[in-house]
Image 1 (tube, helix red, strand yellow):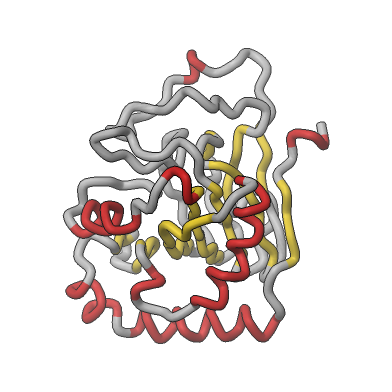
Image 2 (cartoon, helix red, strand yellow; image 1 turned 120 degrees about the vertical axis):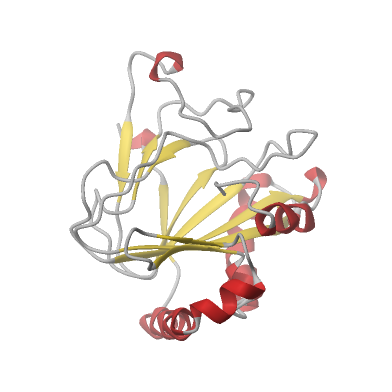
Length: 224
């Protein structure tokens, strides 16, 4: 079973985690102002509290972090990695969101690059069941979902499935690919949690960051 588990790395110091959370607190305190600058990059829960901010690197300078994570992406690709997209996801204890099984694949008219390195960085402690649920036994390298991000039918999945409920402590990072099928926990959160996502594409597949941002700003896509 261990071969199906995702790789988890110790990435950030306590001081780096605290600094990032302080920056996000300041950002969220001015969410109305920033959401006008980046329409389509913010989503809110039923209480009106931001739960996702896409393109966070446009609002917070963490070039140092992008560079640090790049080495892991380059090890996956065996070539230079290009930073592609970021998002902050936060949830409150007791809340329950609905998420279909999906892939973090960005679609363009050409279906987009097929190789992604996807990194989730814990900014709060997350016990299994509070972070993300990943199907680790089946990564279909040549099978992409439809671009409308509709619910993925269970019928196309293998009969034997291995789901991994990822957990970790603040400062740790887990690695998966854009093809990994995943969804948020199926039960209400028992912790407040924050996860910063950084996504990379190999240089040979091109840089889709401008196309991604244009799509996000016009609210044409919900995932990645």
